[in-house]
Length: 498
Image (tube, rainbow, N blue to C red; front, side):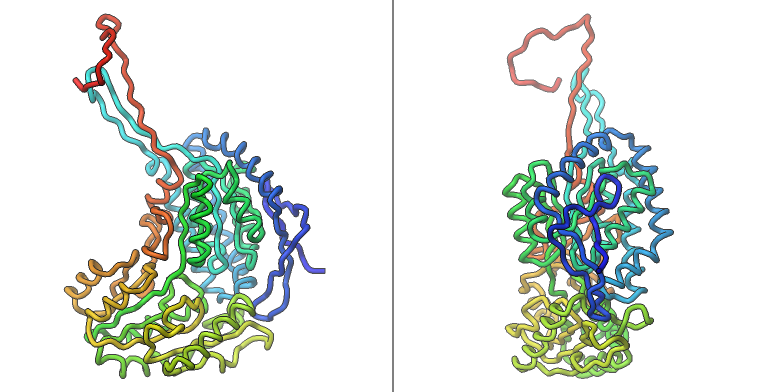
């Protein structure tokens, strides 16, 4: 009988009714490794109501108290990072080094949140009018929900949870049912750090659990990362029920290569950014835009580097692991077939990979297409797998127009030695995160992460000061302490500043 992965409620693991469960696979073997309990709507309701009670007390805790828990959490997670990374590799499939890097980037957000006393400072204006002062404060929302995707089971929760908790909120985290164990390890770290029971909760499940959070009257805000269709659904459903929502969606990230670029550097960057985490990243480069005449030289350089990649079990020191599920592997492989059928040139076929792993694993090797054009499914759709497409264009202007015409606007990059061209690109491109000779421009934690257009629903990005503002409400207080000897008396006129 397989292990049952439970929820986290009131500071401890909680199996729930376990009336419904889902399979959790080891992607490197294809075997079912565990079952995860799916929460019902009534169970979600019970957890949210307990979180609301715990959150009221947490919001009243001093900033000193909150900050001490945040610092302790940072230390506990740093000590247990290898354990968290191992759980990610076992359930997602990404190689261990990549999983460790994911935890480290999440730690950076926790470190940012440790600055809560400064981040939550309000303002004060003395003497705005005779005997009148004004000051502002930022207060917690209450209970907030975080719905995270399978591709970053530790980092994405860490984008939101530390900031939400630092701001005085209680959190209900709904991780992906495909790789749920990392979320429980994070919850254990919070408990070890001294976070009061009920301030952080983890409920597993499918659409029933998601809808219960989106519709619950006690959930004030929802943070989501996932595909664009689901992001749109989360945004529309959550806002219809009166919630503040930030829903980060999909991407089709382009890397523009100008003729003066260092092509060896470009080839290294394209392979790293295209095939890291098996391409299951919303910031992965999936399109290389080669400005004439670089295509003929660049494509062989990329292909030669791909030949040295070792695909296999992420616990064996391989370069790239399996995809997360067999169903997803088959879907990505279908895009390879569609690219060939549409007339693109298949340079490297990942379907032919010989993996360093068990036969039943969800394998698909790095894949490279050349002479891809808009209108082909391999270009138009987010594949979310190790498939890199090269599009050839005649000029910078054509490259810019191609990027700006795409419905997504998550991340982009330009490779060039021309500072003027780079500066022009970063101003003209209609994308939320831009890299100049940086293929994956994920910002540091004290800046905010998020795209434009169909890559974001809502106005607020993740972490940084935008995250602080998302998880708080502003309040302005005007005070007067009049001198009893000079009372102003009754005045029915509109208040004026004197």
